[in-house]
Image (cartoon, rainbow, N blue to C red; front, top):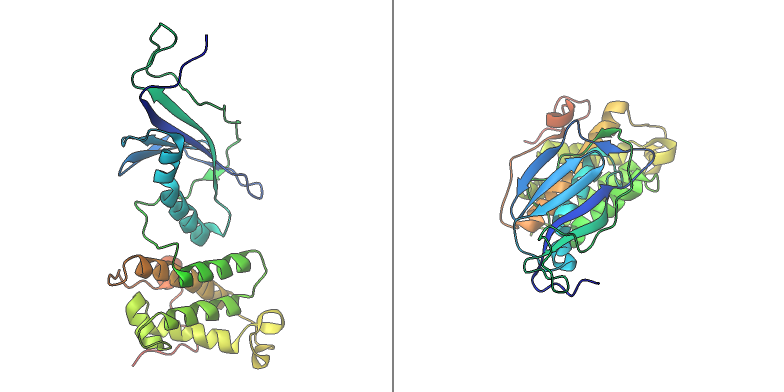
Length: 274
């Protein structure tokens, strides 16, 4: 006898798995749970489960509720471990009928009405930490363009100096005094001297493969300069997304040296703000 259409359905859980990428498989040392508004995020050995406290009557509603959160998580991973390295793939939904009937017999409320067994995945490295909340505006034109350029660099389809300079000019164009680097530094809470150094390196360095200008062909980036520009690209993208999400808000001033130990102000050729 087949089950009737659920009278009062509710989605309890959405199951996702971490997509394989270049042989990287994610794991946690142990099952971890992160509490968020409306749902919990459960991570365990290549699987991610969203357990809902909010009511969702169908799969579409539940997936829509976590879509922005997943995009934010993937974005943060793009900036920390490389574009496209961490992606979640939907597997199945667990839906219950809060007033279930099977023919003339009641069935337990925990029966899963939609179920596809996930494929077992071997474990390898730790998950990127899930975000506390969504903090960027993915629809912002400048943010989207900057992110696309960074992804192109991650695929070796764009040079670092070109991407860094593009991101710098995007920040400059978003301020009311379009084109002002100092105003961009203030709006985005990024040290002015660090933005100055981005411009200087993008102008003077790059070498034969990465130079933006002919005068930089014989001047390769050093390892420290490369790391600095990568960190700055990530920071500029993040701050643009955050400022776009809260146009009049601001966050703490953050410099790449905080995360990497590269001191922008002490590096050769750095210009300090007056």
